[in-house]
Length: 118
Image 1: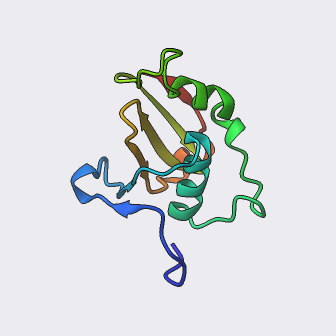
Image 2 (image 1 turned 135 degrees about the vertical axis):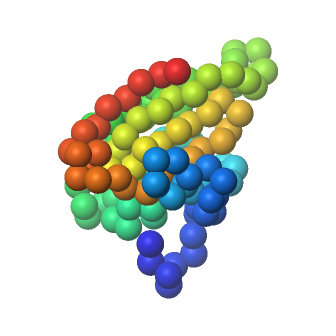
């Protein structure tokens, strides 16, 4: 991460997993997909516009936003999460608004880009 720019993510050592540092994204007014792109770019230290960063390679951004949108009656989503890998980072998006990005893993993780809903 570039130490000269303001950060979106907060280091969350209590969430570290499998030897990978975890970074939590505080609540923002951005869409879930935008927050994911910005957080992954920060944690993976890449430019989403210049480094051929395509979130759609891992997960459909529109679907991601819809999954976590409020119900039609305005009630907030209260359960569910989506976990996927993008740019070598593991991303966990929770219905309660929690977004965690794990630093890039080994080269096998970087090559693999998969999505699953839990």
